[in-house]
Amino acid sequence: MDPETKKIIISRDVVFDEVSRHKDNGDKGTTSLPLFLDDVPSIEGCTQFEENIDVTTSTEDAIRKNPPRQRKPPSHLSDYVVEMNYFSVLSCFFMEDSCGSEPKLYNEAKGVPEWEDAMVEEISALNKNDTWELVPKPVDVDLITCKWVYKLKKKTDGTIDRYKARLVARGFSQQYGRDYDETFSPVARMTTVRTIISLAASRGWNLWQLDVKNAFLYGELDRDIFMEQPQGFISKEYPNHVCRLKKALYGLKQAPRAWFGKIAQYLDFCGFKSSSTDPSLFTKKTSTACTLLLLYVDDMIITGDDSAEISSLQDALMVRFEMKSLGEASCFLGLEIEKCDGYFVSQKGYAANLLQRFRMEDSKAKSTPMEFSLKLAKNEGKILEDATIFRQLVGSLFYLTITRPDIAFSVGVISQFMEQPCEGHLIAAKRILRYIKGTLSYGLMYEQAKTFSLSGFVDADWAGDVNDRRSTTGFCFTTGSAAISWCSKKQTTVALSSCEAEYVAATMATQECLWLRRLIQEIVTIFKHPIPIYCDNESAIKLAGNPVFHARSKHIETHYHFVREKVLSQDIELQKIRTDEQVADIFTKALAKAKFEGFRGNLGVSDRKLALREAVKR
Image (cartoon, rainbow, N blue to C red; front, top):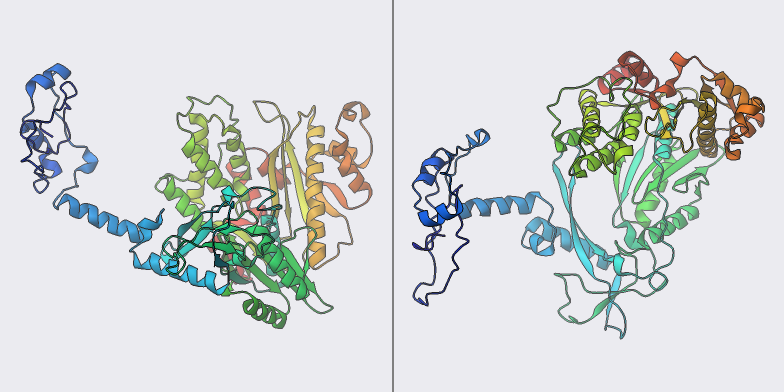
């Protein structure tokens, strides 16, 4: 504002008068200042517009002695022209933002028909479920507050599917021992999800998906909890009453546990048994049929070889709980499932959004996720001033490894520098994105087969970490066509030899193998022979079979000899394999292109079009 003319001036180059102090001249006649916004020029006229502004020369000279330099608009704004009223632009922006984005507060959603309808739908569901009752506020009771949370449910192509409003309790104000006790609630492991999909593909079973509406509201509470009335829906008859919760509500500490207990109790009534290896997997086996139900909070997959039993189960569940049948599974927990001669599982949509989020959609593709033989050290250039982007990228890539074992090692390496990442670490992370750019449609192809067998590969890169000289364990397990479990993890101790490193890795692989064996045996088959685990280190194989090499192995921790016990009991069998055939090598080091692509194919990771084309040929 010019203090003399009392006019608001819009300019890209202004000087503020910070020397003199504004004083009220006592003029009561001036109640408003004229606002010149209609004459805002285009970018092409910005320079001329700024030159015509008359500023106080004495103030400018006092602050800046050098003459102002000629300023030009940035080249990337050359196509931007301001042609409408400033307030019209703002109103259009906020109108679009209110409908196409997720509000953070109730006041932002109020007045938008889509969000208001979503809130009414949520309140109706709560009332139908008899979630609370209005009572006078008890004396000396701390109320739990609540808030509205808004979420846009989108389809796989990014378009809006529906508007979802959820009333959640602010459970952080609950006190342990008074408001809740236990909070743990199991969810399905991703290894279990892949195993069930692999089994369904092998047997030719269909995958059916259901979604429970307002799942947490079905949980029963074992103590009184009082909450304030929700904003926007305060009772006109009892405005000073509070809600005494009768059912669990989203946000409560015990809500997930209460819901799981409710659904598990009903499935037990229907004849299903919770798996001892993964409590989220429920099985029902008869002499002629097998039905499986996999639960992940409020999403579930049902499969089996008895279509009548599956149909009956779906009907029973939809009567007991309000559910939405999604038909054959196509998108489960962000995994895109496509049925062919088996199942093709990928995260193409998530990967594409990841590239767009980090502005790498136009980057040049790479054939491998990490440069051949690259060893990242702690000091890889200048330390990043803001590590937020790097940490967000690493976390996002970790989720992508659910269907992309080919990037497991690379993501594991860069995740070791989360505390103080450097420029070199960010470059390595971006290279993984460039690799994803070239393999966007890749995923796991689980094929239909006559047999369902389990086998594994284990390897270790001795002293591969240049920072602490610890070794990296890598192993994977397949059921014939594609991997269902894999690991790339740095060992917790320094190995004194390659034999010791591979021996420790074999112990870790044995633990996973026994868990997978129990999981599969609970479902369909009994393994009559030891599970083969392929290792390329003959010394480690001999050490696992007999207590040889005492001088070189006497210091090894006792729990690592677990593999020897399981070899002697014939639960597993370590078998020799050539190094150039060791698939687990992809989880221990950065490989050359030819070797990397070969092992990637052995894991069952392939391009979608190629996988579907091969399925059609079969």
